[in-house]
Amino acid sequence: MDFKQLKYFLAIAEEKQITRAAKLLHMEQPPLSRQLMLMEEELGAKLFERGRKQLTLTAAGELLRSKAESLLAQLDETMLEVRELEEGVRGTLSIGAVVSCVSILPKPIRQLRAAYPQITFKITEGDHFLLGEMLAKRAIELVVSRLPFETGILPSKLSTLPLPSDPYVTVFPSSWVPRPRAGGEEQSIGMRELAEYPLLTLKTDNTIRMHEQVVNEFRRHGLEPNIICECSSVTVIMSLIASGIGATVFPKSILNSFPYGDVTMLPIRDANFQSDIGILWLKDHRLSKRAQHFLDYFQSDGAQTFRKNV
Image (cartoon, rainbow, N blue to C red; front, side, top):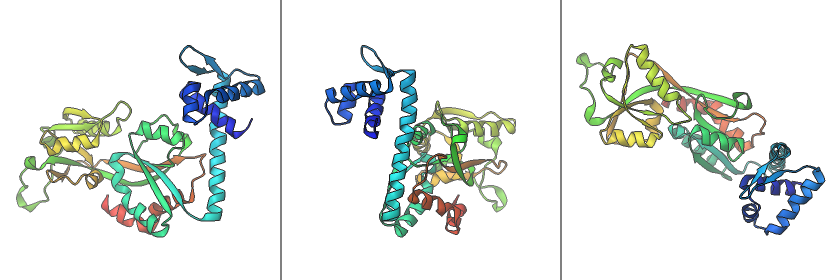
């Protein structure tokens, strides 16, 4: 059995039909069926149960898929290591990011492009669950995310570079901003005042950490938030705030990615809770030199600007 046959097998396992797998592989169906038969003969094991509409992996097939994915990943990493040894730092760095962390990306990307102009980037935005799936399949190499990373990957399988924590602030429609406090104090808002406003929170079926942090902070003050809408998208929440629907409590850095003219940020004077941020990658995955240089930015003196802006 060779690597090409393993790729054929994984395509069939992914598509669950030989016809669709053949189309994905840009080959005819009969040769692909023949390759599957040869693999099963060589292994002496049935890899798929044949249903009327699709194929289902047997226990032997599940084991082979796990091993095949690992072997092919190791092959890709070995080829990358050899190329980088000969060619230097180049190629495409694939990064996944939750939208609330997108403002972290421009400066390290700009620095890497200046130092290594042959590097290109592929950025994928998504929630924790989607980015976790892509990371597991090695479709992306790094993830920039709020912590904890709420995905199906076991934390023991991930390496994490923590970044400076991000304080929570209130985001209002500009027309709602309370009058300045007497005595020339910095304009801010208290939790009891905030509980009187209609609030929007970020919550999905898979990611609830930010929502829970906000609710728990209100309850720590003996209050219940007036939540009128739970949204799965930061973009939707910011748009609704700009339209005067409600306010929210968000990590401060989110506003760097949404320069709306109709929203205003206010610090919360009697609360001091934070949102943790980190860069994650698979522990068993050798990072490319371009990914290592991306991480170096956040571990160097050059990251001080980032730390001050959070």
